[in-house]
Length: 241
Image (cartoon, rainbow, N blue to C red; front, top):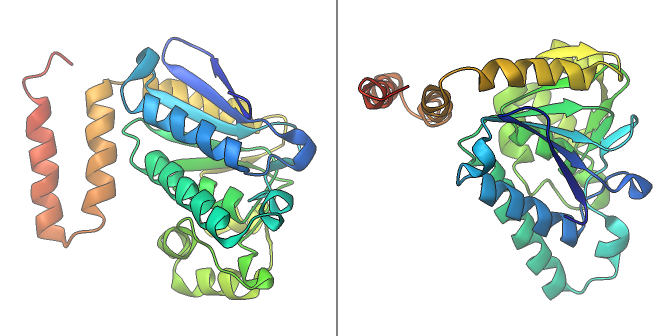
């Protein structure tokens, strides 16, 4: 890929690195194509991958969001076409049966922060800051930010972030429950990999059914969700796993 590095760091764990360090790992059209292709391939159980760790190139910025220099040169039709690509890319990530853990090595803004929110869970550098800044540019989040953020931290905290566009610190993000762990920039990747290896060592069909049950069950009322869980459970009983 032109904008993304992939490295199989063990038999079943893949490290994916957003790799445009000269422009803060910002999302351009090519990165949209690269990530959409990657997430789509992983849906097909490619390479025996059981868990993915997603991080950014460098030690300061995970992803600054959309590449505004590219976008400023676009007409309306190009802008719409690009955003439709981004929508497909984010849905491919969200729908991926394989767990994805974000190792957030630095600041994540706008679409970069929405990428973190689309992962299953995340660890962060204690030097990072996070914001959904779209409101300050006369637009709004368009890759799940207004939906995933309230689900993660509650409506009132999410509204404060969304309506002010102000960044929050890694410590506050951790206290609010956005991250499962907080550590130094040099340790965040290792923390994520340790969890990825633990997930990859478990029965892969169980992992996928648990992820599916949590995701869809959280959108149902309790009795229906419980029945959905039992259906997922029953699919595992006679498997070789």
